[in-house]
Length: 607
Image (cartoon, rainbow, N blue to C red):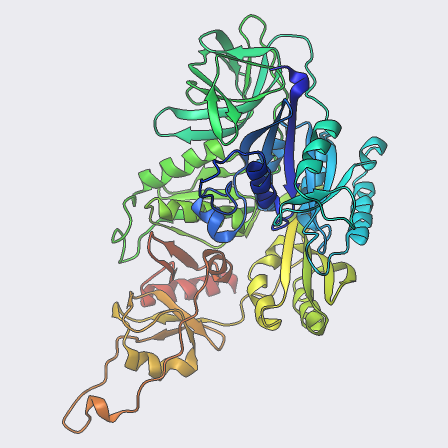
């Protein structure tokens, strides 16, 4: 296809501003689906976890045909924890659709993804979405976007960006803020007219792999854009890896993206995006180059990880009951396999064969990976998340994040009090309708467990977003979890009678009839220090004390945490045990006597 008729665009936005819904409308209005085809909402969020959480985790490639033009669209994640994914896929684009909510305006992730796009000098089109919201304020939001472009040091030609107003949910776009459109045609016209065609420099073949797909039938599939020359099947090429080594290769199958499908091709020209099959161990950042004169493209730089966690095999008494893959060999193979497709992840072997240190971009990044592993049938345990420190000018430095909190005005005092305890610095505070928005710079350590506390303090009204800001000198120690935990004394079934008697000690994570083991954390104690409790204690039934004579037991429902909340709750002597059906907290040392001995030795060393 003529490269002048190709447009490569990436859709970037903050979480929940409507990227995937917008793509749904473009697909429907360009008749990608049959008229009688039943189509699910947010079609591109194909992964179960993406659908459950309502967020995009993996970037997707599709294409549309419009008036003789081929428009390649890349749907990107909005969460900064998946920034590694965003940075890579933007290399395939020549322009971006920057989607901003007509009420919320620019948010932390908007800034994060726009910064990456401006660094690559991609032509932006600003889409002010959700114009159907009753409290939409498009004029103010447009001013915020101009401020953001200036703040990020955008070139003059990029600041003069075209703007379009849309409601992705209702399926219309318009060039005027006061006029509702009929369909998405104004947006399609703007893409064709404003986004430049891909440049096609003269020279030998260059194709860079920016994402990896996997098929159980053909193995690894490399997806990338051809920057120069052309690529065809069964012709010799050189593969230049990230480390500079070269390998002779032949491409067995070649696909281009047509609608939602991949279509087989014999040859693909510069400017288009394609998928390649038949190269073993192909990896992100590799360049496919001319056989005679291989010239590699610059290596894709990825932001460094900021959080690390210890992964180990499950050693609890319930080990192997639910999972298929439970040994250290299974865990080792799965962790190192993930590293091949997720370049923001680092895996190192620990000081024993069962322990691995896994580093990522944030707690969400690692918890999504753990959730995928447990759904595949893996059983393992993980330790407390720890931030990765660096040394700058001989001083210890730690990652600092930009934190944005939105809450109703009556709760803002509580928010400031809570965040202030965690060495955070307030940057600005402003009103947005009936909400107040506060922006902080906070150490990454200070974010752990903060979401839960905020929601409790503001009756569930607060919303928080954060993104990596920079490394700064160490801020000093932070307050730890104040309350201790309740630990099960024995192994067996939780008895309602025992649970009822212990309710005034704290809040439980388990319910009657559930199986627990000695050393498992079964609840949060309402005082400092840990306490061992007997949940198997049954009522002694004699002639004098009948079962029916007691009043009915009233037991409070157990606390239910998500995986991220468990990770933020635990202390450094605890582990989160993750199996396909259960998530539990346990002490690292299960036996009470050994645990006490270990604590007293630590005190002696500290004293």
